[in-house]
Image: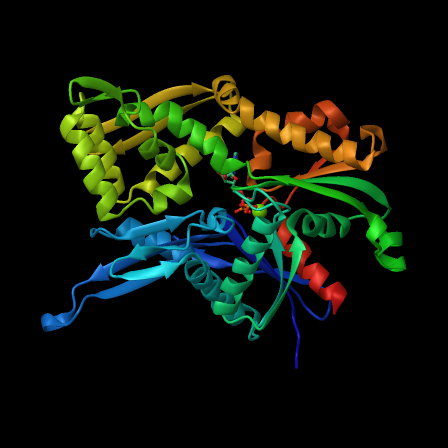
Length: 432
Ligand SMILES: Nc1ncnc2c1ncn2[C@@H]1O[C@H](COP(=O)(O)OP(=O)(O)OP(=O)(O)O)[C@@H](O)[C@H]1O
Ligand SMILES: [Mg+2]
């Protein structure tokens, strides 16, 4: 049986896949997107239903990743866009969601994304991919204990299984990133990896380098790991809370009997988390919101909220938030804009405000890093380099956490969206 050294990083926001060829060269999966190629396959699905011919039942179509976005953007009908599913894996009471007439489990939905990635990459690499080393966070989003964490890993394994994989081997995402970083080293180092994605921030303290590789890795080379379910999606939540929710009624009131009550929190806490917003579009939720709207002091605002859910505008909202966040990583000020019919939100945002909004999240990330140093007894001065990767590592306030502890000269970066997949593939090659 031929085995191939394939690594797959199923991320909350992006999935990437890499292969190490027999000559040692590495190749990334490349996917067509709006006329160009991308190696970051958006971890999303888009479902659309079209009427069946001559009385036949309707037909449901599903696209994932870049094709999902393309169809979503060009569609005029009301489909279903589902994103950030990885954040549901540890949530025991979240089995799945109704998509049109069919109930689909989280495993099935993720499996569908992975099946498409597998098929497209199999074509590109010229092999039938059935084995892979796959990433997992140190701690899944929403996992309160180790049992939850194992439960999430088992569900992810089931999703790979449904996608046609025969065997998979799990590796921690930051450890995989360490392998990628090591591939550029000509000397040994003790490194701290920080991988900041959409759902989780993950850390590993690892000894890497040619000697470690040649002598064979031992458990002692991995000094420790730590992780927290706070990253880009949690930063986005703060942006939505400040710039979007108020215009959709979060600070408004509704009439209940002879009392005025504040709007319930649940529609807005769901609106602020991409994975929850994705599953909000049910008849029951829309009915509940319509009832609230009928008693609301500002029904127009609740109408906007209902419209956003009914027409599945989560992707557009995500895109507006993403644009603001990305620009604030480069500039100290940027424009936020979200337009939907006569709802037109525009504001100028200073980076300093954004940093204030995410202060609590940054503190939790800092506590996680400091906890790892404390539990391993490693002093910052003993760390030779700090490799920051993942899309959220672009956030200047995230980088500052490391600059202040380790000094700017020790910070390394690169391959933000692909280092984990490449490291996983290298590890698969090393194992075989
Ligand atoms: N320039 C940027 N500035 C700030 N944030 C960014 C930038 N580019 C991407 N991001 C954020 O990075 C996140 C995606 O990063 P990445 O692809 O590494 O995550 P992931 O691997 O899918 O998630 P996870 O590892 O948590 O499962 C998103 O939250 C995105 O908004
Ligand atoms: Mg990641």
